[in-house]
Length: 366
Ligand SMILES: Cc1ncc(COP(=O)(O)O)c(C=O)c1O
Image 1: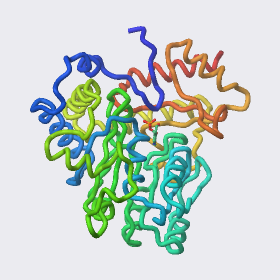
Image 2: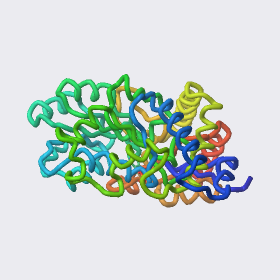
Image 3: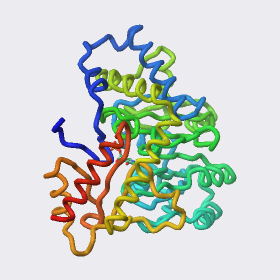
């Protein structure tokens, strides 16, 4: 009961039944039991991603899937347009730069929304083959316009890579309806599982680009450990190419059971309601939300970024909350000391959000 309440944007608190799943004895990862578990996990994730595309689970955190997406698609001369309005968008630019000499970043100020016209102008000029963006920018608490960018990307005949690491599981993300070619999620966020796994969906169009005209996959400059073609080949046998992180798979399976029991519609609504409660409480306490948005629906329902008031020291405020049993996150990069962030991700309850608000109120009083 007295456990510290982790309200950071991942890892999120993990329910005891999900934690307990990790203590199961190990199994043969090339046997029937693993095959059944992997197929079940993939089927449930496809339901959550709302996709019929291929989907794989990688033994690596979200960044592993970000690199898998870009590393498999992008070669030295591939034109890429990489949209960024925060730390994780910029990470996609950095990964892009490792693989291509032809990445055009379309940068917006951290905390500002993405302007479609600017993105359109970049596409018009650069004719990208790949466009990357973060759906829910965790560093600033903004939900980016994924559907509109997906539409634009299609219009310019490019592939769309969307980092849904902190949106899938907390929002409806209709991957196929929107036309997202590669979508990724991390285990330790809205899915409510422990950290260490990520999942990636891959469209037919993405496979075509990866395989090229002559299907000479091995000659491509692609990652070895995160080779998605190897993942696809192994999946036919119900396996992963290399030894999977079994305890995390056990936990993920249980976390997905929890999601099925709640139902996605209810889960999304709970995320919306909790974020709404939190945003109202924060503003009622006289604090300001960080993002500068006209469109209220662009405030993230999975992470709330709040300005640190001039008269207060960030470390002191978060330290005060921690003394009251609640851990929240600071700002990242250039926002360090300027904002703090409270997550409402995964299996967080109303009671836990109330406890967080009380801790904040009490810490503000000093
Ligand atoms: C939007 C987003 N992308 C990528 C990442 C990186 O994920 P990981 O830390 O699991 O590698 C995070 C982590 O917070 C994130 O929020």
